[in-house]
Length: 364
Ligand SMILES: Cc1ncc(COP(=O)(O)O)c(C=O)c1O
Image (cartoon, rainbow, N blue to C red; front, side, top):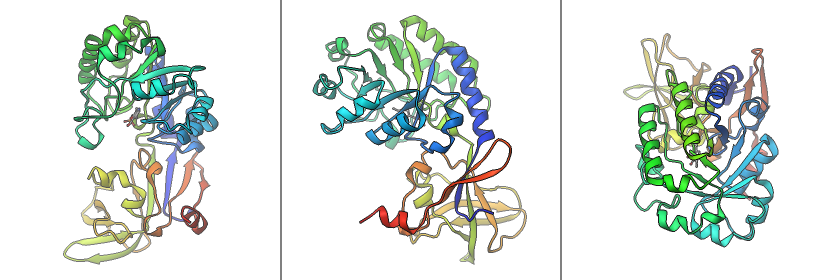
């Protein structure tokens, strides 16, 4: 048995998402690039690259990881490139997408050898969280002024427009894409490619994948563009668990179980967005599942079990891949979860473990 804590990626579940991506690619002609900001665990890229066209990035290091570990088409995007990064970024990328006209102009000569794009901010989005809303007031994420963008059209071949956030509603997607067509059509018809970013929850249960495919195909045909999607969460949703062990049980007016992990260190995104972890929910025995860091609010959430918990029991926390493994950290020096993969034949393989040396070498 592998020592907890560890993230367990199930390749059969990953395969299910990849088959939906295959269907979408075939039906729409769109290309799909994995958004590394969401998931960058490269041990499963061998499976993913059979079903996705490449990667997109948010920094020089993600860009390089995508080029070296995934291959295929490699899009480079960063909110702002530094002068000392740009040559290396260009050397790894097939396309570079600038966030602003200022950056596009500054690095015009440095990026002359590859295709360039610009991030377009449509000034609306589907995000319910201010923190993650690219259309929030004074957003720095992309350009929106059509007349200003028109002045640089000769320098770019495409646009990236990221405006969806876990959007499960195809009707809303359809409506907002229509708005983009109306408001930005005269720009779109002058480029060769448009990336619609990530945030479309098309691998979710019951999502009308074929309707999405048809809509994307119509969009591509209308403007004569290659469409890209940049799925992060949709590619890896429901594929991974965080496996933990109960270390202690307390009752302070409520049954509490302390596990050998920490939401602050190992599932930080949930804490940031104040969402509970997905824990077992059947049975009469209710416990609050707590992390072992010193943070008072290091709480995964409430869980229910068929039997009373005891020290040494193992618990699986669901959906632990997206924005989770990429954000794990060394808070409190809590042991970082190892990474294991359940192969298609059911066997489990440990691919990475972390120890004291990794902790010490992350500081100096
Ligand atoms: C530019 C861009 N592309 C793609 C993504 C991936 O989004 P998701 O993981 O919701 O699919 C994001 C997420 O923030 C993004 O900012």
